[in-house]
Each structure stands twice: as C-alpha cells, then as structure tokens.
Length: 179
Image 1 (cartoon, rainbow, N blue to C red):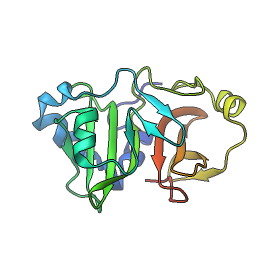
Image 2: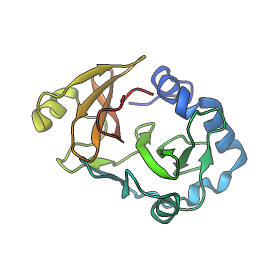
Image 3: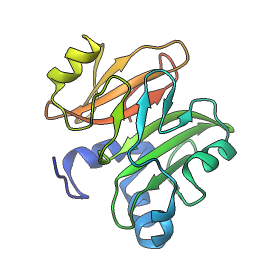
Image 4: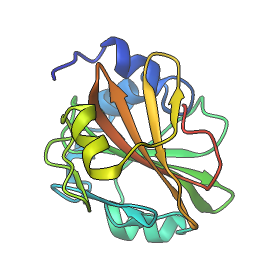
C-alpha cells in the first residue's frame, strides 16, 4: 500500500502528536536522520516492546536503542521524538514521553519488514490479524481504526487503514490508541 506524504491516512495519523509539518521539517532540515539506529526490520513484542523500546524507558535508553539523530515535534502537547530510515522518507518509528519516560511508542507510515511476535507483518489483511490475535477491541479513530490487545504493562495497538494492518503501537494500559 503506497501513500504519498500527503496521503489521507498518514496526515490523520500524524495529526496532533506527530504533526505533518514537524515531520516535513525533520526531513528538510536533517538529512542525517538516515543514520538513526532503528531496527531493520523492527519487531513488536506484544505488551512489552516496539523495536526494542519499552514503555517507561528513559530518554537515554531510547537514544541507545534507536540512535541520537531524531526529530522533535514542536507543536505536540507532550514531548515527541521520531526517527526515520532515510531523509525525505516518512517511514520509521516514534515515541511520546510523559516526563522523562516513554509513554507511547509507534511506527510511522508502515515501515518495510516490521512484524510482531505472532508473525504478523505490516500490510496484511485485517482477517489475518484476527486469525492470529483473535477478536480485539476496536476503536474508530479519525480516518483509521485501532485494534487493541490489552496487556498488564502495555497495550499493543494494531492500526488499520482500508482493512489492512498499517502500523503498530504500544500505549499505557487503558489509554487512548487514537492520535
């Protein structure tokens, strides 16, 4: 599924915490973003980690896991960092902090090769997600759908667009999966 930078789902998902303007500023001002140490491909371990980042991890821990080159959202209510694989390309991952620790982690724009610990890869049909993960609570967000796998330490979020798995996320238990 290919979307332009102005694609309808991407703009909606990036709204708020991941403002499209901030992502464009990162791409235009920081060509070194490609040197971020994001896992290639990354992996969601349900209820535990996304690409090696866990909820509650410190900023130093995120830098160690994903690198020191990242963009900061200037218009977000909470401190948000995002990492991309290549300059001018929006695929990657990001984190939202609450104070000094990670409160949310998520993929950006369906990065290639990312999978979860049940074998789901981004881009599969919702029916495959349901087959492997069962029927999950559904939350309709603005322009996309979030399916939530509840966990003790973290909820795992499966973002859908057009009936296909678009992205992964981790949030604090019970918090909103919508951006």
